[in-house]
Image (cartoon, rainbow, N blue to C red; front, side, top):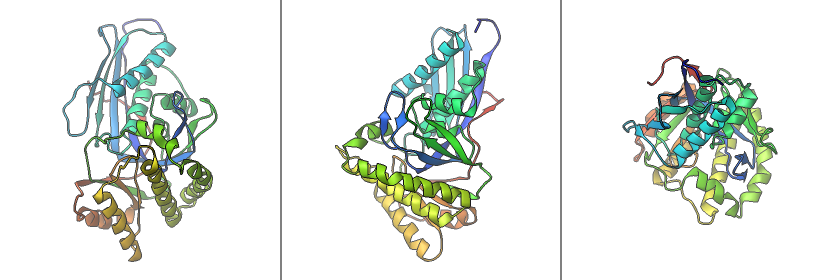
Length: 339
C-alpha cells in the first residue's frame, strides 16, 4: 500500500459471546488451535467499540482503552502487546509502516468471565481490515481474528449462534454460523457477582487444562454434547439446550478445579445462583446457568421470562447487578469514530 494523505481509519463494534460449549485447552498455543469444537451466542449489551487510525503524524503506536467503570488511559502490558502483534501482522499484509492510534471502550466489566477478549480482538481485527482496505470473506476473517490471541474472538465475527471448528491446521480452524440472531428468542442475563480482575487469567487456565486427570475424559464426551447443542439450537429445544450448557459448564470448571495447581473461579454467590435456578425450575421457571472463566453467572432463559428471573436473581445476596442480553449480530463497521 502506498503512503499517501488519505485517511486510514475505521471503527468497529463487536459483541462478547457466551459459550454454550466451552473452549478450554489448546493443542497449539501459537496458532490458537483448540482441542475441541465450541458453540456460542453473541450477546447484544456486552460490546467493545474500537477505532484505529494509521497516520504518518504518529511517531509511535498508541493504545488507549477505557474499561468499564474506569477512565480512558494509555495501556501497556500483555494485552497491549497482543493487540500490537495483530497490528503488525496487518501492517505487513497491507505493506505499510505507519504508526497506529487505537482507542477501545467496553460496555461491561473486563477480565471477569464475560468474554471481553472476544469482543476486543474481533472489534480490533475488523477495524484493521477496514482501515487498511483488506478484503476477507467470513471464513478468512474468522481465521485472522483467531490469530489475534483470543480464540473465542473468532466466534464474535459470526452473526447470532456460531460454532468454532477446531480443525487440524490454521486454515481449517474457524467459526461458522449455526443460526442467525433472529432465529430464537433467547436471553442471557449476566449476573455480576464480582467486577474485580480474576486472579488466574483464561490464558493461564488453558495452559493448565491438560494437567487435570479429567481432561482426556472431557474431550471424549464433547463430540456428543456438541452435536446435541447444535441440534437444540436448530430445533429450538430449550430444555435440551439447558441440560447441555449446564453439563458443559460444570465439566469445564471441574477441569479448572482439578488442574495443577487448581483454579477456583466460583465464589459463594455463584453457587447460590446455581442452587436457586435448580429450585425455580422445579416450580416451572426455566433458567439454566453457564459460567465462563470467572465467578459471574450467565443465566440462559426464554425472553418471556426475563423480568421474572431478573427480579428474583437481584434478590440473591451478593449479586451486584445484571446485564440483559439478547442474540445479536457479530462484528460490524460503524461510521461514528471514538476520536
